[in-house]
Image (cartoon, rainbow, N blue to C red; front, side):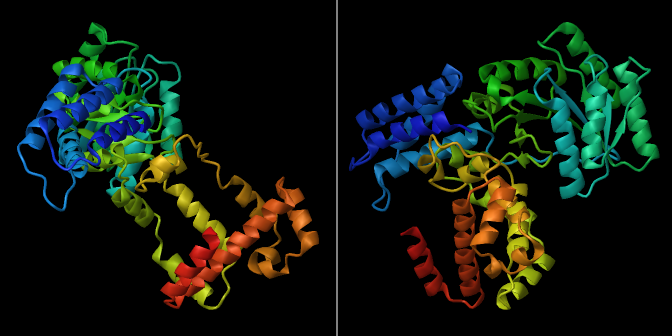
Amino acid sequence: MFDNLSDKLDKALHVLKGHGSITEVNVAETLKEVRRALIDADVNFKIAKDFTNRVKEKALGQNVLTTLQPGQLMVKLVKDELTELMGGDASGVNLSGNPSVILMSGLQGSGKTTFSGKLANFLKTKKTKKPLLVACDVYRPAAIDQLHVVGDAIKVDVFSDRDNTDPVAIAQAGVAFAKANGHNVVIVDTAGRLAVDTEMMNEIANIHKAIQPQETLFVVDAMTGQDAVNTAKAFNDILNFDGVILTKLDGDTRGGAAISIKSVVDKPIKFIGTGEKMEAIDVFYPSRMADRILGMGDVVSLVERAQEQFDEEEARKLQKKIAKNQFGFDDFLKQIQQVKKMGNMKDLMGMIPGAGKMLKGVDIDDDAFKHIEAIIHSMTVEERTNPGVINSSRKKRIGKGSGTSVQQVNQLLKQFNQMSKMMKMMQGGGGRKMMQAMSRMQK
């Protein structure tokens, strides 16, 4: 996400490194490179120019504090302006109705149907709502089937009428069904087209008028860059929607849409899609995204994801096992599953400050734990509970059964032992010993 933009901004901001003061010359040189980086990321030229002009005005209008180097000051100014450009504060979804009706709009291929499912899952699990998905795409082959598959996967009801070809009537019937069956949120998935056309706009406008949604969201593929911004403007002129959803931010996106869409349509980005799983949905926080673009990571979001997977009862059981020296591979496997639920590995690593630079060009596979899980699943119950019994002949059998080598089995056992020791130290409050152990592991 934004790797290319982050790299170019980092190089641009390094121009001021080593300078003792902010001058018109070095600021102009730095911001010229910042503007190039933004334009290369598919940000509109006028928006990029206005952005750098505002930063320049602020940079030349203040003295550098003794505790802040010119380079650091410029990073702060760019970060603040990026945050404002992307919306300033996070914007929530309006759930005031009973039921609350959310209308999903967008072009075909933007990920609208999948995101409707993600949003339903988010509202069900995070907001304790009882959502209903309504299938109003009567044109695309298997669109209704797709929404039913999504609904089944997240255990959310789906309303559809395969015999009806009027999306307005289907939407109205869906809202009536929700009222009759206790659903307090209705998410209406509408048809998309390959391009903006009059027929499509009239249809979505008619649905909007008929069901009077509390929230109208425009779903856009972030990988389409400036085209996404232009399409959003066309939709907003007709619908006057309430917010934007950016999908496929985990892909090879240049970031132009995320950075400039707010200033064009004056509507906030409310959510982002960061993967294929139904849990891969995040509330959009402009300040956190600005941090990530500038390579500062996003520790707050990382901690929030970890907390979502935290189970207090399991944690207590784990503490007792560690105290009694009974931590085994089954427990290790549970920890791996929790990490996997937090999201794709590349996205998680991007939230750690500085990790983006360190891992540049490194392909982080989502199946990074695959061989570890295979090795553990090839162990017997006794071996998982008491790893000390695993001798050379058992290692050969485990390696053969998991499709790995004895060396990989040995490596996992070594890592497991080191982790077990560290967890034991943490349990006893031995912070200094733990740091010493970590230092030895790095050597």
